[in-house]
Length: 84
Image 1 (cartoon, rainbow, N blue to C red):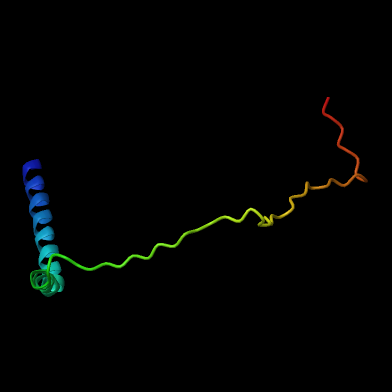
Image 2 (image 1 turned 180 degrees about the vertical axis):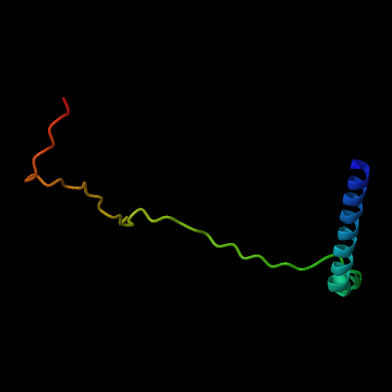
């Protein structure tokens, strides 16, 4: 009985995988063939331009940062007594 169930499981998994591959080929097959043709048509070398800019730090710069203040407790409320 277990052999029949495992055979059915593997057969169903194989059919599902094959149907997914067929759907992918139907959807993206033309683009894959066009990409292969495009790679054959273009040369191996491409021209690339790069621009490099220098970044400098000024020593006279002013650094602004927020002021972090401690939370003030309300002094009018008495503290709770400690547990005995």
